[in-house]
Image 1 (cartoon, rainbow, N blue to C red):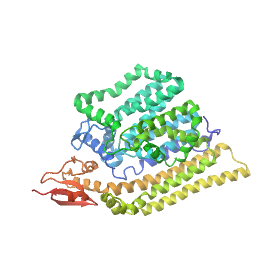
Image 2 (spheres, helix red, strand yellow):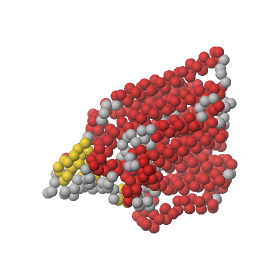
Image 3 (cartoon, rainbow, N blue to C red):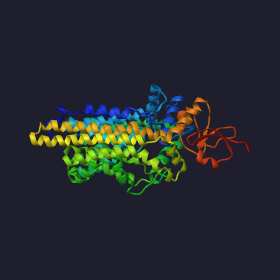
Length: 535
């Protein structure tokens, strides 16, 4: 497939330009927002404990065994904190680096086939999609797993199209790391996609060749096997019950922790995960038949639909599950942009401006609706947070700048048609450069202003309480609440249980009336440190 230009990379946008812009988006102010509970706090606290205890074979969360995820992301986070200190930037850095690496790998793969301009645009779409930005700036296992799934998919396609055994072995290697990052989903997603594509494309011959690879299985076993054998030997049935049964089989069969939804749950949220590029999803639907006729685009289309169908049947539904199939969707969306005309370009620029204003205004609108929120504690958090009006104003200014970039290109294109257009490669390169700056401005407003505001608004008091415990060398429990970031900021275990007489407990002030008699020791924006009174 081609972009319809001779060689635009000679005159403008190149992959390294995009990667510099993405590095700025992912690394700048990476630690500006406090850790978001529950997930970020739990991963960060478990990794901190690993570093402090020196036990690199197993994870604990506030004194209890943690079997939620395998070991790999904790290793990366602990190593990062060993180098850069116990802070949000360090614990999020592995996710950012792996996501940046995946964007670069996708860009390089497309550049080899379609030219560097196409690779640069594809990397830009990948790296600036809202869902990927969220995973790549979060201290969880999902950014790592998503990157590994992308690398697995790229290797599998190279094997499917060339029968290169080296590509197949790389696919097994990335899958093995995925098993260490999150578990069986690292096999289910790419394996199911390859089998379905092969059944549709060559009656299963490619899938059979990929599965009948003893050296590949040996490589995967060599990479992932030792830790699983160690965990099983160390914990026995507790590991099987906690990790295999509870956090994999039961998570799929039944809703966990209230995370549920209907069959159309992911259909509804998919457009939001693809912002600001959502208008291009319509182009994927419009060109679905054409994409199906091409083996490569059929591969990514099958992958996306397989993930959508599989997780739609899962009992537990969380938005980031769909991101495992969003990468191929974004690949197809980038193809739509590369082949599209002016109408699609206008829609994309409007989408960039809309996304900017919507995200920038989210805090302002949440604060204005706070009195109607049923949860009194969250309403109190929003009302006591710093006003978000200025962020909305900045977002509006950025949106105007984005529209001006788009209008500049449209006016210039019309002028060129009247006086004689320049070389077509220069036109496309100029378009790509303006696209990169527009996307960087849009998502830069989100990462630099919106995300930190939300972090301070809803997580600021938990960080302040944790730091109070640390600076005053106080031990406490989580009393009728679950916020594992407390332990990370306190740099100690903060177990989930009611405090005994003489101990301290941290809770929300809206729960104080339902708790036994107590005295308040310290309070910050609705988070209270209390001591139960003796009967």
